[in-house]
Length: 456
Image 1 (spheres, helix red, strand yellow):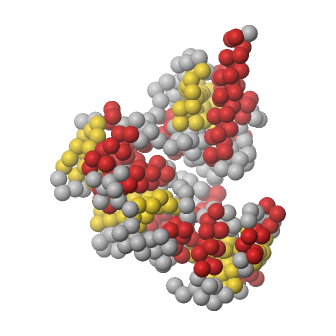
Image 2 (tube, rainbow, N blue to C red):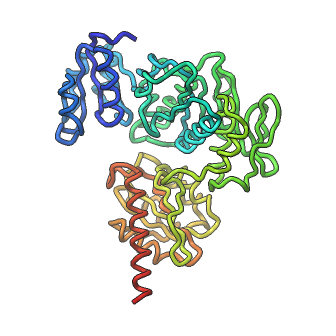
Image 3 (tube, rainbow, N blue to C red):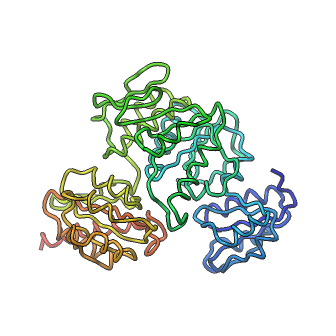
């Protein structure tokens, strides 16, 4: 891809947009302009980049700017704006950051996508490879943008990258040597508009593969299973329910790996991660890391030692036998159901935030006989109330301090208070991490308050 002298517009100026600008400046593009819906006053490091020759056209997205470009690079999270789509229809090349990076990378790529579990699985694969002594980098939606590793990439390196549907939407040729598909369920419908559009974006990672590439699919997911019938790449699978011809499966409470030979990897009792969904994540990581060159001892040790990521079924603390759990990353109905199913104890569940366009009614059946009470917060609370009214005791709250206090008052000794909101955090917070941190802060505040009360 020749970039020298080109007019390029970067849409979105958060972490990825800035990394794209850094790369494009090194490529000596002719004109580099940032378009962001936020005004310049709300963006970071504008002055730094302006000194380096970057122009800014902010506060809105102008069609005229896009039509005058040779190339538009769209940051993750920026939806298919009408202005971007019109520019593409009129012949302007529109790509995502990962597509741009792909044309310049010089290493092996392992890409992980799915509706839930991406960050956990990506981290597991990375650690299994790193603990095997391989030269490996962790990139993508989970951390450093892929474009930042172009200069560092070497043929003997492996990049493990978490890939979202946002990033895949504007890809043309992007492919990975190993593509991992964890699961598919309705997600980001506020962005993609339809479930079909969401699935189509995800499937691009699969469709772009070539003969000789490797694909790892969840055998227990009906949609993913159907994709394997006409796949060009070499297919491997993982399954909790079936023995697979090549891949990873569960038998006699043990995770087994079957490639050249059939080998036991780890007993389920030795896995510290809670929940059957995390068992699936571990199986996906086991087969993928082995295919990428990880050693069996490193795979076993990593699977045994891994305790999970922050904001994913993170057990905060117990107050008078009530366990508080932070699963702020559970931003879909499917993720919330998996979180609830991870505990056999009665649950006081916290739902709400910004709706992603999903349907909350499946929770009526999925949570039956598991949830003692549901507390609602955020923009989506009225929609959730309408979907669940009559099935569970419901209560609306306004602040996280009130939320934690009411959850504790509603729980009984032995219960779990679970933050698994089934919504994004963007109505009240910058991201799910900020929401999870505030939840933990308020739980600790409540614990101190109760301790002081006991002393007095």
